[in-house]
Image 1 (cartoon, rainbow, N blue to C red):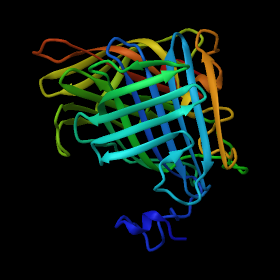
Image 2 (image 1 turned 135 degrees about the vertical axis):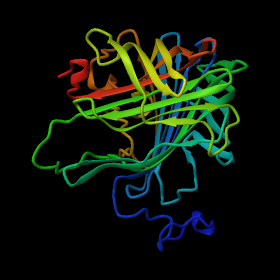
Image 3 (image 1 turned 180 degrees about the vertical axis):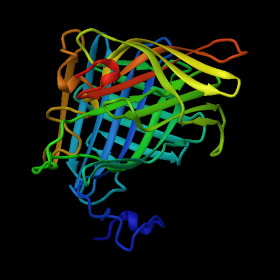
Image 4 (image 1 turned 90 degrees about the vertical axis):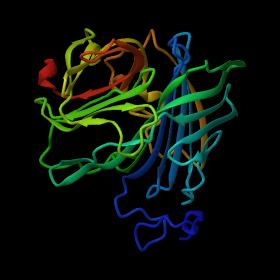
Length: 361
């Protein structure tokens, strides 16, 4: 099965690009978020390709006046992985690893045009590999890059330009995750579902700070790293350590979301600390993560586009579809011997099942 991608020197196996190994859960995804520095106009987007399911889907979501406005789209991939278009949502790679453009053609009250330009060369996070018994639950690679954002977003006829200095984060990941319909035959013997995830891409005036951790229910990390990356850093730049942690976490009562926390990064001259002050909650279901009917890779039809509006004041944050969030946060970085720096970023959180360090059963 020859496709447009086969005319580029990007093959990794003897087969055409249309075939991605043998795991039906293979995926290839773009993620973006962005926000004004005064905390207004938070938005996020995702675009996923699922070669073995022959499906692509895309999502764009904006929070305005306490409502998370979401646009969902799904189509048959027709094995053409180079067509980064799904209904009204499209992505253009203007300069690989540096500059990308997201466009939402007018649809269901939405329109947007946003350009993302990297502040540094992307970081490659440690490979994510997690098995449940003999079965690979996750096996993927991800690049992450903080960005400056320019452009505009229109919702129901109200167009707003992103403010000067708007920033955010974009990533690209590819590999194996659960996608599409749930597996009809779960692993045996049965295990209690559990997953602990924190991710904190943070934007400061002259640098980026990144942290992520996957941990077992007892708190032991199986994938983690922190990075401090000055603007303009190249592929080998910045400070990297697996020894960071988020401490002094207090939980919002009745939820699995943190009200506060402090990232601690060991440095040669002492500990760098980042204090989080979350003030806005974005539900990741708005871009397909954990969505009950717009699950990533789910079969919807040849081309389906749908709008959803979520009143954030009325949702039950303890419901399973609302566990995965990004908390937009004011952050303060203190490094021994330096003046404190103030910035902004997201504190992404997903806790499923027991997590004993937080007293969650």
